Length: 254
Picture 1 (cartoon, rainbow, N blue to C red):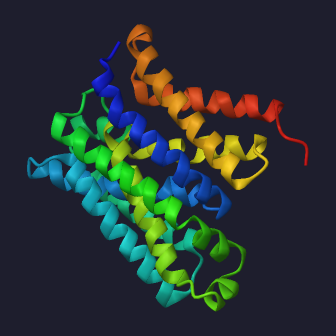
Picture 2: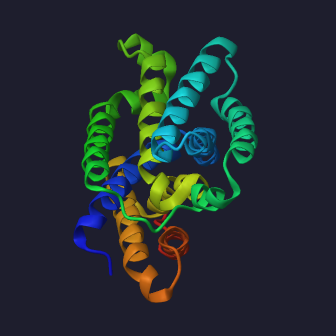
Picture 3: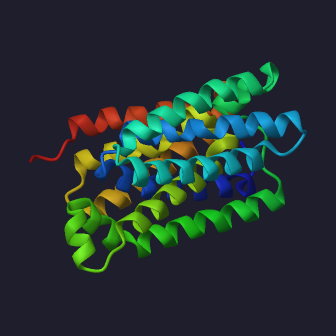
């Protein structure tokens, strides 16, 4: 069983994932949300080639990819999902060529290696910033979701709100790269929120439920993985998927 100090960052990451995921599901970005996490792979590959921390490379690639997606969305007026799909495909192809074979599996599915003290502190600060930013911008995010024109008439900059959300998403993905990798991190953002949507009656209750599912799945994955002899990342997503199955049975009447 991992010591409590090693669970702090995964739990902080899962709270941010649950909160960001609830907004992503409301914005119908479920598939796009999973794809954007793959943008980190080229950065991870470049960092490994230059013997740098792969998390730093992944975060840099996520920021660059987020800004590219935001800029293309503004200039081309194509749907966000289409732009993310193009960037995701290119990033996955480039990243798989750059990442050494031995490290590619860890980059894709995460590692059991515990984070250091500095990484834990910085990660918790980043998770707190994501959580506070999304909570503060929640009303603007909802208004822009209902109607972009309505948001503009109330003084909300839709473009700025979209950029804020994409950056919060990128940071959340970066927080989970060590534990879940680029393939599975998007799932921890999507599945808890999709689960919460089935059983919640309001946005606030949906966000609370999404956070609860993400935290519980992460905790169960981290605690049970050593006993079962499996990696915590895949087990975490399996637990989350199981909770989604239960939510189908408990689905709230419409």
